[in-house]
Structure formats: C-alpha cells, structure tokens
Length: 439
Image (cartoon, rainbow, N blue to C red):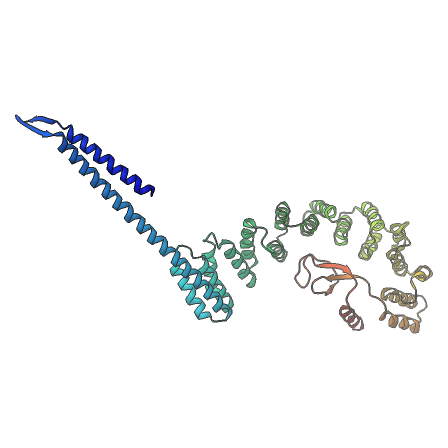
C-alpha cells in the first residue's frame, strides 16, 4: 500500500511540474556560426524528462534482474545443500550397512553438491577408507582434512593414529602435539602424547607438555606432580654417570614432587653412594625409613654398610632406630642378622612374626635360619613347604594388566605409562610366582 501511494505521489508531482513548465514556457535563443536558433523551454524539459524516465526504467530493470538472479542462486545453493546433506545421511546409512560402494558414490555426490565446503565428503570418505583399511587412501584424505578449517582437528588426529599404528612415534607425536596445541581438551590426547613420549624417551618434552596441560586445566595437580617428577627421574637416570651433580639436582626435584616414592629414593641413595657421600646417604636412609619404610631399600643399606666398613646388622639397627615395631623394620633386622650369620639374634627377632599363618617371606626367612643355624633339612623343608600357603609380599603390579614385575619403571613391561603400583599380587600372579619358585 505504501509503495502504491509513493508511486502515485511521484506521478502527480511529475505531472504538476510538466503543466507548470508548459504553462510558463519561454523561448530560448542561441547563435551558432551566425545562425540563430530558437527553441521552447517546454521541449527542453520534455527531453530531460524522457531521459530521466529511460534511466529510471533501465535502472529498475537492472536491479530487478540482479535480484532475480541472486534469488535463483540462493535457491539453487539451498537445494544443493539439501541434496548434499541428504547424500551424507545416505552415505552414513550405507556405511553402517557395510555397503561401501554406495557410501563412496554418495561421497562423490556430496562433492558435487557442496563443492565449496568439502568437509562432509572428506569425513564420509575417511570413515569408508578406515573401515576398508585402505590406509594409503585414508592418509591422503587426512592430508586434505588438515587443510580444511572444519576438519583440521580430525585430520591431525587421523594422521596421529595412523603413525601410531605403524609405530612411527616421531611423526605421531608431531601431529599429536599440533592437535594438543589447537584443542588440549580432546579426549585422551594428553594421555596419548604421554604414552608416545614414554616410548621415545623424550622426557624433557614430558615436562613441557605436562606444564601446558596443567595451565590449560586438562589435568589436576596430583597428575601434574607425578608426571613431571617422572620426567625429572628419567633424565636423572640418563645423566647419572655423565653429569652426576645435575643428576642429583634432578632427582631432588622429583622427590619434592612425589615425596618418598621408593624408586626415586633408591636412585638418590645410589647417586650419593656413587659420589662417595656415605655420611649423607646414611642420614638420609634413616630419615626416609622413619617416614616410609620400604623393602626395596634393604639392598642399598647392605651396599652402604660395605662402603662404611660396618656390618649390615649394625647399620640396620641405626636405620631402624625407634621404628622397631614396624614390620618392615623387623624384617630388615632379621635379614641383616641372617646375612651376618647372627643366628640367635635372627631367631629372637623373627619370633614376633611367627603367628598362626605367617607370610610367605617370613617362612622363607625361617627356612634360611634353620639351614644356617642347625642345618636341619627336615625343618628347613617344612618351612619352605609352609611358605606356599603364606601371603606373598608386595610387588610392582600393573594396574591395567595386573602383571607383576621386579622393578618399577615409568613404562610397564606391558607398555603402559605410570601404571605400576606397590601391592600384593592377584591370585593368578600368586600361582605364577609359585611356579617360578618351584623351577
């Protein structure tokens, strides 16, 4: 309605102006080359009016044509998108039905209908090639994906997984790191990078990635401290003989982050013994033992006793100090007495641990005492047989595979990072330990 009124007013205005000009026309004269020309002002006005009307009509035609063309393009674009999305849905359905030929055909349709945005086509093709295990074609698709903003992360992840499959950990880490830097919250990306680092022994990178993960709040403080301490520990081991002082600094940092963790404490004591800091090692072992007694320190206490020119049992008594009531302290004193062949002391110390069902370790120690003190084969065999029914001592057990191993390592024998815990073995492990003992 408004448009109609506007056009009507414009026409009326033009008619009024035309009438005014015609009613008030005058003659315009001008001379050219001695010729005098005259023309009415109304004619000039009509010429200008016709000219402007032609401009208006041409302009109206141009914009209307442009609008209709744009409308057609938009309509075609919408229809193509609908066809493209429909092809994607059909492709995913075909993929779930294991109809890979149709899925590839639908992916080509997506490319035709969504040529300006190949994201869905690349995604569908990657899924098809993944299921078909066509890894060369899949690699090419992933390379295209990383050049597309919408599929960039999927491309990096796909390439990382491909290189992991082929055990090319160097390239797997490169693409994994790019993915982590772009989006550190992608599920298990940090854990994957940590496992790659552990397999490649790139411990400095573990510290860097772990610091980034904490700053982005991907991991909590406990995991940060554990993983960073492992980085320090592993680098300290590498530098143990080439740069002993640096190695000591690194293991001290590790212990600060993971206080009294036995593998770190062991390395620290070994470094002090290696660098002939025997008095420091002696004080440190006593301090650590009073806080957290651990059976893995016994070998180092015995080794230190040799360097201090003292008996194992005397150093053991010093280390135990006032923590005699602790079970580990009692076992340390028993083993030291057995080592030094102090049989009466060993018998006296083991009495408190000979309850109704003594542990396997206690039975085996009692068998050693009978062997060394009385050489009574019958009693020795009886204690050895009884050991089979006793509870086993703690071992390093993988929390994922539940398999045991003698020494702690940042990467378990099964290939899992920081998965070892100090605990009693499961029933299956107990059976295996018994078989090993019999052999």
